[in-house]
Image 1 (spheres, one colour):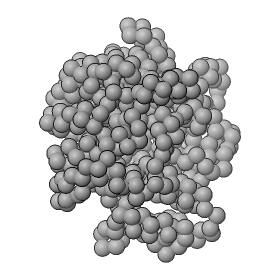
Image 2 (cartoon, one colour):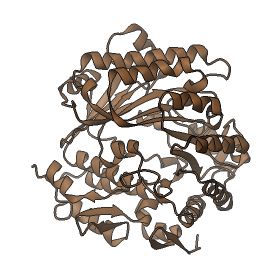
Image 3 (tube, helix red, strand yellow):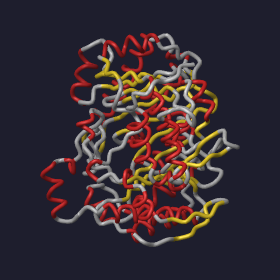
Length: 489
């Protein structure tokens, strides 16, 4: 990877060379089958389901901003790279499953609302239905309307609440979007991954390039912001094919284009997902022997090709990996969901099998919540038990809490305000270890820069390119696992 390209991104000129960047930062090179970096911490004191429920009850979340998430674990087809919690439901046979899952998700929400007084008083600024393929609920108004009506009646939604739903191209026909818009959805997420039919056929995605383009045109007609998810590092992809895909999307004027590297690590081992087909050691070894997976260098050549097109078209990342046209969103040109989840690290209330959230509330210690991941066990619990379908939780304090908050803040690609960390944690990021040396190294390597007259730190475009690796190496490992003392407020 030797090409160096100068491009104009907003007001700055940037020289792109990810090959040289990786050579300068060998500590950030993560092999394909170990690459499953998650902003959520995998450290901290592990709590039982009962202990999580007790902590949930002690949380003072009334009146505080929060994000509300529901997980629908159903798909019409299973992509071979997917390691999220999902179950196959054949096309044309969704009726019973969709009705069941609407009832289960509403029931879980009701159990929390009945048990915790603060929950209906939290200020919900963003709402998201994910999956799986959440937009299967748009097959019929009767599937999704009860869930939306429950949310609107039971929670305190702000007047400007961002209502999101995600799906695949076949889920965003004009008739589906008419239902969604009538129910108040004002932002959408479309999973395309590639506009190369050969790639989608190999990964077992069941839509064509033309279907993807039709869905994009339908979404553009709504006038609402939306993102199109695209992956790089997949079999049959090349830098040239990725560049072509990006050019098509930017020429169409897609508001936000999200780019993701293939994650081929086993999330089931981490307790936060299902094993993908390609995670199976026998399958993975066969694909490696056949030379199907691009090498690390070729993978980053694909990202470089994508970024060159995006910068040339005037897009800029906010959050990291989410490239938007100027003026798509307010307040840093970042979706409200991303502001809640990542920039501010507000409380995230999460329902459904495998869903995980967190309670933060501006404190200096956090609670992570993790639901039962096994779908059958979740269903059985909800139908036979009266409690909460929790699996476990984690309590984060000290450096683990600070490292996690920094990771989320970095992911947002918004200023990391020094005063926030001083006030919330008693942590001087530039004058106290282990923070000072970590940020000094990031500054020296050109991965972050000082902004706002020295009051904040922000990722550079080089830092954005390696944001997940930086979050893992510097914030989760170097800061989060430190045993240095932490100053309290």
